[in-house]
Image (cartoon, rainbow, N blue to C red):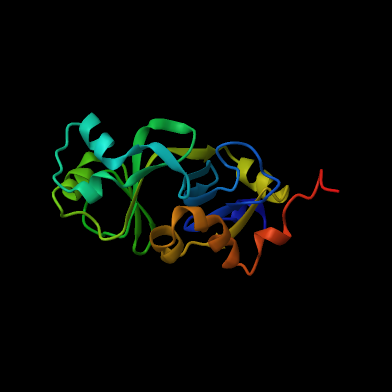
Length: 188
């Protein structure tokens, strides 16, 4: 398959053990957009230092739900790190939304956060600050260097599996045990 015909939206990028660059080391990213202009993804397994309650407070949204306020906000990547990205499964007409796949969406507008705070948000949701971006051909080059594994996205990985298990869980979808791929350099 040529690079020009490779479209990986709705796939997970799973960092190979050899990829040590932060924040991508042991990362799992949902590719939200991929075309001739490049690719955009959101890391889905790395907590940031913020909770949803802190984000709500920063943007002036009130929530009385302590469990919702305690939800960790993810570090979605180094690009636009001040901007919120919401991955969810709710097909309602939210502002500034991108359909990643049937039943999977990326929204960057405040209306979805307000609905969440009022108890009327999506059933399954991830909130991240920042995203990852690749210029034309850049992701394809990283794939050719075996920096990433790719697997079709699975809602069980995105919404059900604990953050700390997503790297292994996504690799397991391919039948890959990351313990067998580890970099053995430096071991006697």
